[in-house]
Image (cartoon, rainbow, N blue to C red; front, side):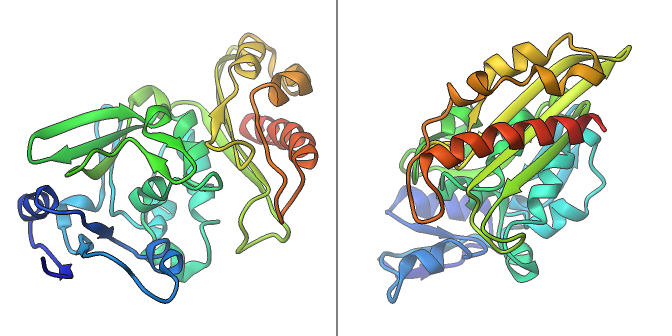
Length: 275
């Protein structure tokens, strides 16, 4: 088998995927650092496939898997996706944002992937394509654990699909790290809320870097629904946040610190989304 291929069409890429165990390359911002001194295995370079890049609007939103973070940050998107754009501006420096892709961020499946919490609160699905056809899977079901996804042999993540409801309301993304920029998060939160008549009618909150995968907070969401705008932050109870998390001790923070930080970040994200 050849060591490197750069297909010109998606059909060609899927044919190659079906015939071998390829490492998919788009921006390379996760693949190359993770490879160390040697990149093992044949590499399938999909960066040139035009059908994998770009943002399409309609009833909802379709973001090609090879769309760079800088394009997402600069796009004219609804308020419900403001958190995604805020996260896009914190995925490394400008060079990384220009090269790194939304699909790569998801397939890398890091517990600290900045793109995951904002997409979770938008109810995002992933589009997985192989020679056999295309299937959709909720993002929550796609990332199975640290560095593990539901990709099957021969499948390529081709797009992220956000339903119309996931673009509604207003959202915010808050990230805590050892410094303000260019840092892997200790904890991060995305919140999306819709308000009618001065009350929260829809709420979605997700926390990353505090479990093996980013998670939604159903108890917090339930407490927020129906709350008056000026009392919503007080509805965020520490126990509801922390019960959903399974943080670890590592070089960046202790599990106990992450639990405490997550509560404060949820409150800040809710307040910012409602501001």
